[in-house]
Image (tube, rainbow, N blue to C red; front, side):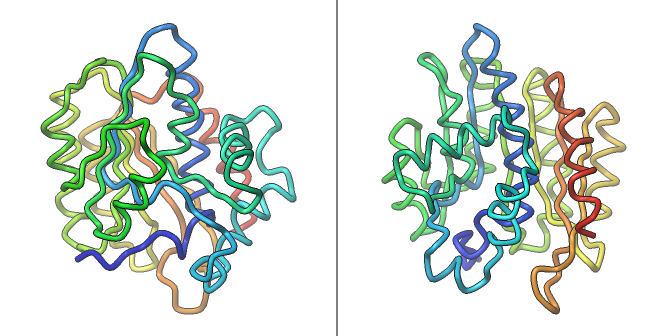
Length: 259
């Protein structure tokens, strides 16, 4: 199924959690004078307009990045703020970067990016803003399996599916473990929704049992609207860069009042 479009949810609380961790991880990779590779299995369109009809329809960004900026949820030196400022300097004050453009902010000459997106509407939009990357209009899991271990060998893989296919919860622990075996030095970051029916719980249990040194960051918040199933955001990260656990703890404290 390919019905999901992130424009309705860009900049929401889950994005804030995911992108704050991603930006810190990428900043850590970029701090060393060695090239790295960034890979993403479900890249989306890369750039979002928070005044678009889709964003206005849900209003999720108002409770997410807009509130976070107004209330200083992110410290002034946070890497996500620098990425956001760079994107808005080019695309205007209502722009919000998806993970591809967040990654773009930290890439240096010699670094490499591979972005996969299968959606027939999202891929052309991604291509319009992601000329810095190798683009794959293909299944993201197949791309990752084909390219890992990448060149350069240092790097980060973000797995961020829509979970439209309920079987993703069952198959992702196996996919993640296979990729981790092939790329034992890679940072592998999986985002998942925390759902009221606890559909995610088995997947998280499998991942933590198989990768006890991984970093689990899970935050909760009230549903975006009555009947909405997502009540939080989770990230499971294998080989987390130094300092990422501190950011996860800081975010847990920020999100605690939102439950």
